[in-house]
Length: 165
Image (cartoon, rainbow, N blue to C red; front, side):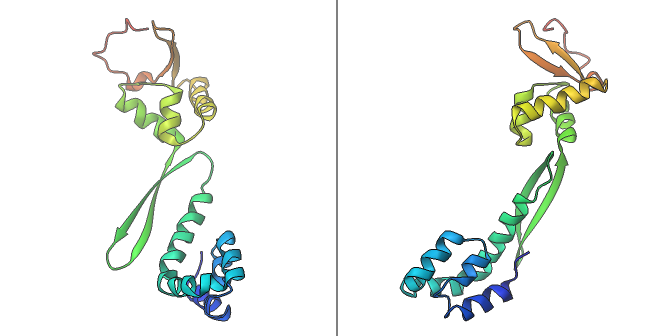
């Protein structure tokens, strides 16, 4: 977690932002190098940083949180503003995403639908769905069109005709 106080301290130590130490601290290496060689873009960028450093720290913390996601998790991010901007995160496992999608789709889903919704690769989606098949939670079915779908019997629509399979 980056600190606003430390960012301002580094801004001050680096000649009021001219050397860009604060940018290196926030992981903005290319612009840190640019600030170092141009004196904070002729000091205009250094002054800009003075007024926006708090927001830059929040963005760096947000970016850092995104890279720290555990595998198999999907993150929903949203900003809440009530005087102070905060980051709120709701975690959803891939398995929960599968069940939610299957419920929305009357018990049927494909690996590409899961990959799109869970923000994972199609191969990883297929692996997760095949894992549920091996546990007996889902079934692999072939539609009359030849496409593969995964069915979760507990969530299948009882009124839907089975002629598509």
